[in-house]
Length: 185
Image (tube, rainbow, N blue to C red; front, side, top):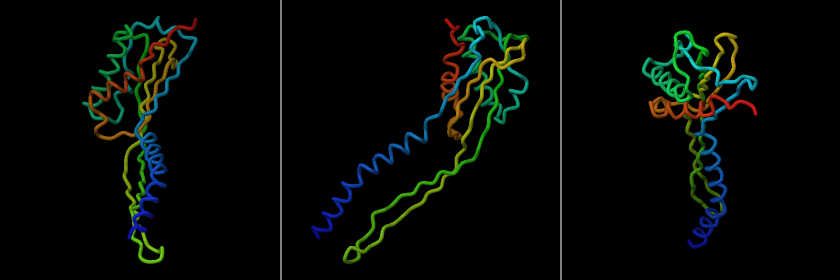
């Protein structure tokens, strides 16, 4: 009996660091959204004083409550950058998104039983879960030149709980935190 306990305790000690590393990699690879911002470096963004949303921005496939939260969060960021809403703006904000269905597979190995002379069995569990991976794009278009001058994007796993007002504000703030870009020196 002691030998079996020693084998189990040695096996647990030997595999524990590997399991911890695998769990850490899994946790860090899943939850964090990725942010990307790009812009035309030749533009002085401080000359833009007014904004409006493109008519196409209202056609994103979200319910009206979520769209309202999203547009309010963008308006908060624009107002924070001293850019106010206008019927005939200097810039247009265009919002669009892409969603993909994904399946995540988690395999768990259970502790088995030793039958005799080192032979035995173990249990394996497989869990399939479906989720959506999405990207939301925020494009800033110069109204006079009709050219894209700034774009921000967030990509990550999106679930029902991610569309709360607080989450939307945080995400939009992270994308727009460096808007407008500082002029080159």
